[in-house]
Image (cartoon, rainbow, N blue to C red; front, side, top):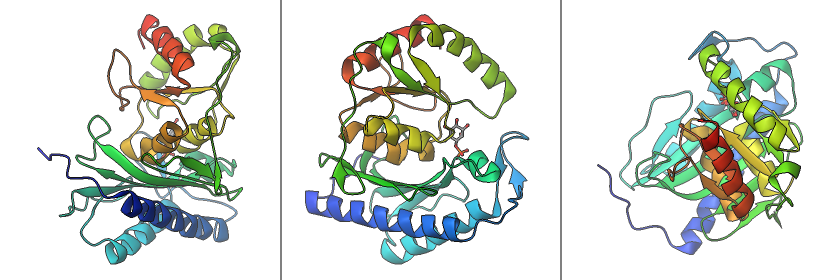
Length: 276
Ligand code: LIP
């Protein structure tokens, strides 16, 4: 078992934030600059509707090459490639294109997500240090560093506190397996009548950042991979959100719920009531 190493200093963490930002923006420029008119599915993963494209792989390759050169002692956990081990106790958690289905269809909500964590690269135990989410189509970049706040293109962001759960705009998403979606639809039926409305935008990284800058009041999703939530989760927390799972558990693949403290607690209770 990997124990949590001593954490980098505040200025080292700030430098990691700057590196995450420049890597996410460079990778985003590659995606923006070379999206073919017709994007093809290169392969499928967990199901026939879980696609990977040549661009997912090209971006991940670029990020891995940059990290190997700039941070050779760090480990890497990425969506499209094999894990790379390291000696520093720190791991880069990267999602080359979060929202791949949107990228495939040309729907404008997809992002490059780059984060660095200390300890086991497992959401249940990791310590997120710094991260950046670059929204490719509109070029917006959110970043955060542990105990140093979060920003959108350099301007500080803060979660919005809705007056009530019933007036809360809630982001969510659905998995790639039909059985999982059927279960998520059952939970959604329980949630929808109790909130303002639902937004299914297709990228957890962007959803968590929209929450951070007050354009969603709450977010929940079951089945997120570590790379879907690493950077966006830190941006949300550094913007004042509470991020957790259900039944006192941390936010993991099992369930991720985020929002302003009291509204988040109410959504957690609603999801527990629904047996989510
Ligand atoms: C996506 C997530 C999204 C979820 C999708 C998918 P991907 O990640 O960001 O929240 O609803 O099913 O998992 O596969 O585009 O990296």
